[in-house]
Length: 371
Ligand SMILES: *[C@@H]1O[C@H](CO)[C@@H](O)[C@H](O)[C@H]1NC(C)=O
Ligand SMILES: *[C@@H]1O[C@H](CO)[C@@H](O)[C@H](O)[C@H]1NC(C)=O
Ligand SMILES: *[C@@H]1O[C@H](CO)[C@@H](O)[C@H](O)[C@H]1NC(C)=O
Ligand SMILES: *[C@@H]1O[C@H](CO)[C@@H](O)[C@H](O)[C@H]1NC(C)=O
Ligand SMILES: *[C@@H]1O[C@H](CO)[C@@H](O)[C@H](O)[C@H]1NC(C)=O
Ligand SMILES: *[C@@H]1O[C@H](CO)[C@@H](O)[C@H](O)[C@H]1NC(C)=O
Image 1 (cartoon, rainbow, N blue to C red):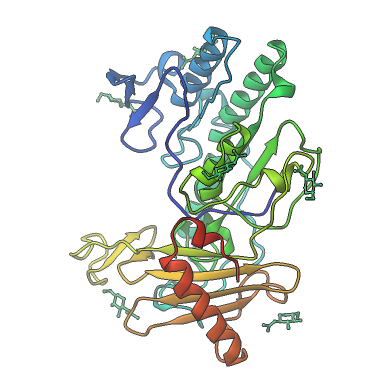
Image 2 (tube, rainbow, N blue to C red; image 1 turned 180 degrees about the vertical axis):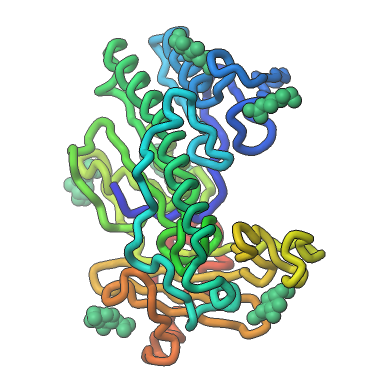
């Protein structure tokens, strides 16, 4: 499965697992505090005993060894990688030394027909921004080598326990990322494909290998999909998402795909100006490197994304002083280079606006009414 979009925050609950470990604070590799079944556990910065990605791997392997074999299990692993501060394991810190962020698509193209924030970056990007984003790109890959180790060890463990063919494995992320697209150095808060799409790979009973599905699947679908696999009657579950088990494993379930969906974001900003960028006023945030801001209070938007056999469109409305609208035809313009709001048939705009209003106020089953 490859076409997924990240719309909600990280899915952070677990089914009936016997133990629960939560990290207090955000994305640290060392010097973090864990909540282990409600008890605080502080960690230092020794690679052998504290590197968080490895620690999660080790505890997961123990969880599998200690589990009761008669009962099904649910395990959710949320490593800090590849989030900043991109602290790679010592043995991986020299990897990918020749790798640079790709220079294709919208890389270093100024978004001159886009919303206010996208018209601000320096273009072309200065050397210092390029160096910064290339280094971030490499370090992200380096941190993911420990995630590769995690996947390998877990798959081998399941295989040795004879549970591999009887287990669903989901591999995904909670947000996309950009490195230089539209001259924005690094971040994840824009409405474009590079920020809203996430990888999703699934293996398990009933899923044929090497297939790629085009219909969109959302983060909000993970919970109902997992419940569906567990045999839960979904009509008794009140969620906005829908199970995609029928898409992955048609021999097990019947179901329909969704032709369009909602994308929304509420921009964040600081009420005072950033002292390191005195020329910029208040209301902005994430202004680095080179005082290019990645977010603002008025980077607040809601979009409808259509993806089916006939249409591949995006329609977005901003809550800013310009009530800015962006529209993309991804069939002819996969990199979203041209905002076609002034060219497109007004009837299309009106239909998309009506859909947006419905999707923004839907709840439960009404979110799955795809008319
Ligand atoms: C962890 O905290 C200690 C004590 O404050 C500090 O000396 C060390 O540099 C920190 N290590 C990392 C990797 O941040
Ligand atoms: C994880 O387990 C391996 C193998 O036993 C060990 O070498 C490593 O130090 C452990 N790492 C952590 C962070 O617990
Ligand atoms: C699922 O739940 C709904 C609503 O409670 C009920 O009408 C339906 O019969 C249930 N289906 C099965 C297969 O149990
Ligand atoms: C799907 O629906 C068809 C027609 O109603 C039915 O024959 C088939 O058994 C269903 N398949 C599954 C996996 O539920
Ligand atoms: C967005 O917010 C910034 C910072 O407050 C402001 O300078 C700018 O004019 C606003 N733009 C729009 C289109 O609302
Ligand atoms: C999008 O582009 C395709 C391919 O050029 C075209 O067939 C289609 O009519 C366009 N859709 C809209 C709404 O402009």
